[in-house]
Length: 105
Image 1 (cartoon, rainbow, N blue to C red):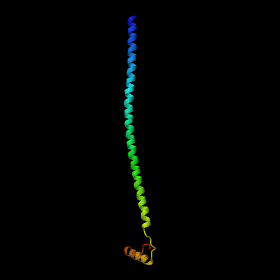
Image 2: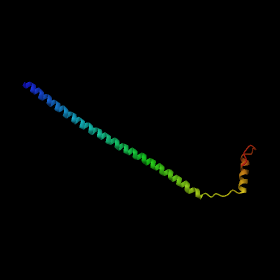
Image 3: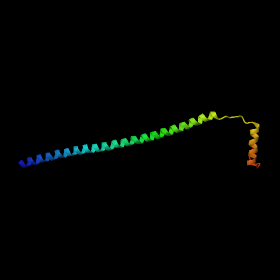
Image 4: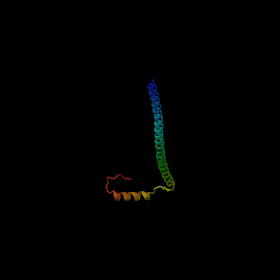
């Protein structure tokens, strides 16, 4: 009878130790996974910041180039073509393309 009681107590003690080991393993694995997750999240945030910065710079440079073009357009002076300009163009054209198959301008 005493042996049965000792066996039961030993079994209870082993079950208790087993449950405690499972709880410790769960805590350690949770800590490890949480640590890995936080590292991955920080890495993702860094990558996202780099991508957003690249996109913002690209957008800024394209807008700046558009502004340069818009600023340059009013500076161009457009004059009405005179007859002499047309004659000069046609004479140059005939020198470059002397054949009669060219389309006259």
